[in-house]
Image (cartoon, rainbow, N blue to C red; front, side):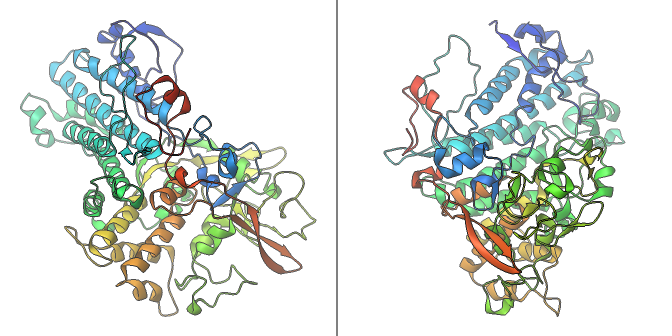
Length: 591
């Protein structure tokens, strides 16, 4: 087979991974050239890496009740306000993921034939590792496709996406039907198992021949050779641990209410797959003490080298050493930002009081005319409210209608002010300095998978499987996890306790609501809310609300309506694909 490809060629095999996948100059070659050119062969796999949907932050929270934007052209804004169609889908993963899977399949046909290095033992290790990466990546892309495009057909069948594990070429029959949802979940599990058999749990250097896995030690491999292939130079690559995380995420999806009736997924399976990962870090004791401020832990971020992870991160992208573009986009105008993402009053109201009680509880002592006093400390960490002091100069942000000193106030005509009375604070380094003439950047990175997500996955599944305090095969419960997360957040009453959590610990339904709310808070602005609302079968049409402050009076108002049809709990198959291939059934309700 001959096929002309444009590929992104990986950097040399033995360099660090933070800059591993920088696109190279366009180079048209035949696939067979990779058999004698390992850099070119690995470039085929590198092309798949570049298509990871979480290589950057999307802020799709704008499509939910958690945020709006002041960018009138924003695709998520248009989607949420009535312009979501099968040929205009900002959540689409079909084309990019299918292309990545094609490159992966192509790579898997070649990997065993490539001469990676002259030494046969080291060559086998390279071959095994790269195959393992390919299987893990294929599981990842199939998960993202399934999350975005699975759904029920007109006749009530829960369908997934087409499972493609063979190379497609000009002679292939592309008109094939979708596989069932369960078949797609099983395909993800199968690829994760293949990856787990070939990959180390983590890429770390070893210091003795005795630590070399038996499969390679029996072939004569020493620890130096092992480190060349599986050492810490490759920490940013797909590992056994990362592959297991995608199995855990897929299991949670399968057990969720939107899919449960049509799938074989169980809450116990989801809890066990997520618990298996948590057991590796000591269960509840492994919760990172600074995990909820990962984006602003300056010393921790500055010390990251060579793909190393802070305790909160299971997988992250590379570190940008001197970035400030995020702050330019999100700082309030008085700090020379564009204030693009505006958290809603809906999200602000989801933060409990500092004593842990929801603001509508009698025990909350909430004052709607002094709404930010005695609140969950995470509110001040993640959201700029009226009176927040921020930036290198300690500027007080005034979001009131009365503000005449700058453009931070509500709905100023410059187009950069807040539409809700709030600005984004999460993700931002406030030691970044911006002005009309000077910028000073700081190191940044973003997560691909945080351990807090895995903890919350486990809590959700364990509560459904075994109740709030049940542990199943593990030594900790949903209650234990939520208690640890809220303690880390600083939630406590005058006695240092969490009385609200204690009041719901024996009530599965109330614990469910609490877990979902903790997930909303801990993972806000990280691309989870839209998918969570859909898999929970919850209302997508909650209007986005804001706060208008005038004359010292706080008044809630509707900022933006949401316009979703009920069938939109499941995303569409792209219109162009359905038109081309009559075997490809559309999800119910979509044209």
